[in-house]
Length: 446
Ligand code: NDP
Ligand code: 2IT
Image (cartoon, rainbow, N blue to C red; front, side):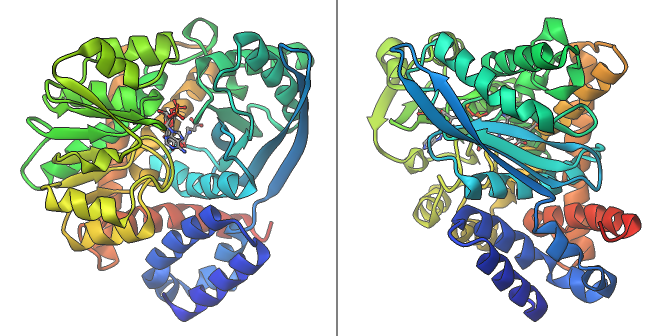
């Protein structure tokens, strides 16, 4: 790493002790920026990167609520408004027991560059809570969401900060959050949240967009090498929003997706995942992945507590969570003939795993590029809300495809310009950084 960047990274580590995921996300960006700082001293002079690493605003709050047994529960809520150089803060909310400030800051930091890469007018932010929705009734989830929004509403708005979903936050939660926002403010302000239901301001294709986009990105990468998704054997991790829709798009493009997972283990289905069955179990019933193997019979088996990356495949779409794919897993995948990775999740590959993929010549699409289809379609939802319009599935899908192609090409061109041909990690980080940096330069020291 370049000397000035190393000093700055150390300063960021000192100012944000114990936030290992945030440190990891910052390190990845800094590793890529060497050629930029030497070519553009004006960025350092204006303190651009130092300002980028310090969120514009961080909100931490208490969320009291009463469970079905009548017991008072206390959770902690977060919203980190990281950077508004390109537009209102934009990024999801995560409800998971592992959430603390370091997770929200890593996600918010990634979001700045991801959102810039989409070409849409959106800044970067992220939020969430250590609330665990697993095993909670709908009524408990509703009371929790209402309490969460009772604080959050004063910080957000269609021109200020626009949250959406992430792990543990889907259509149900966005509905309860929107209802409470509307009640408190007495405004039907559709553009304040994205991922809404289709009859009250949501966009077609938003539910599918992240998984679809990640597979489109993989297809684009493969095409630069005269291949495509057709005929690929695809490994998907997770079985939530991103994973299910990655499996769907892989199948549409003529690939066979053979795996899915959750925190209890994975299933492998040699005949290809039966998406209808998996959706019924995971979406309709909020069940566990093991039930898939029980109900599918013959071709499928469930492996408890093991890594999905032990299964051989040619394309991997990690779609569960951060650091789910480590160096050992990467080694196994390469040995088994992997040719491409498109990260559906945020930072699913450890730094060592990423290096190993790049050294082995695996086509590697980092999350901030490959999973940008979700937030990009959120921006399309905001456009529809602002114009009080609703677009057809086909039109919105075409827009998503054009955006993903644009993200892909921008990464490749930038990697070329900065002496790292074919390296999407370098391309994504530099392209995202420059767009935000130039806007910050123009807007002065704020
Ligand atoms: P969901 O809550 O719908 O699904 C999450 C899936 O990942 C579940 O199968 C869950 O299993 C698994 N998972 C979560 N945490 C862990 C863990 N610590 N260990 C093992 N498995 C885990 O979330 P999404 O599909 O929306 O999000 C998945 C990833 O994609 C996240 O990294 C998110 O940040 C990223 N992402 C999401 C976008 C979106 O639009 N939703 C956009 C861009 C990125 P279990 O149920 O057992 O916990
Ligand atoms: O990580 C992400 O990009 C998301 N969870 C989606 C954010 C959004 O605002 O749609």
